[in-house]
Amino acid sequence: MTTAPENRGGMRPTAPQNNPANVSGTGGAGQSGRVAQGYAYGMNKQINEQAAGAPLANAGTSSTGSSPMGAMSSMPPATTITAPSELPDQSIMDGAPIGAGNNSIPGLPQPAPGPDNTQFNATLQAYYPVLSYIASRPETSTETRNVLSALMNGI
Image (cartoon, rainbow, N blue to C red; front, side, top):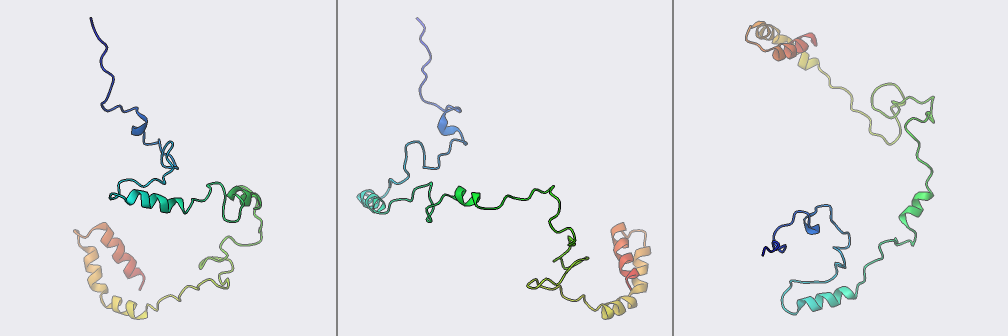
């Protein structure tokens, strides 16, 4: 007589506890998340009594008594990205520290003036023969030549 294989124990990959998507916001199926366990002898009861004295807020209400979805309904509808501009005469660069448009909106920090490169250019000009020699060498990389060219053209 053959018997069916025993179907107990062992790892079952399809068991609910092994499913990473099986997450409950209340702490698990049938668990309130409010029961203290694993503390020193006598502490579980004391902690559970303290927790019972401070009931949790109901999940569906806020402190004002209205639901978050109720606050959403009083807001104006969102403008879609394909809707025509509500300010067609205003530059899209308004408020940006560069480009066309009103760049001096009150309250926005203004960009610092550009650096005075006079001293840097004078020093760089003194090194022009050396930089030119480095750029002309066959072992100089293309990237280095590009940087030296940009430096030398800037003075």
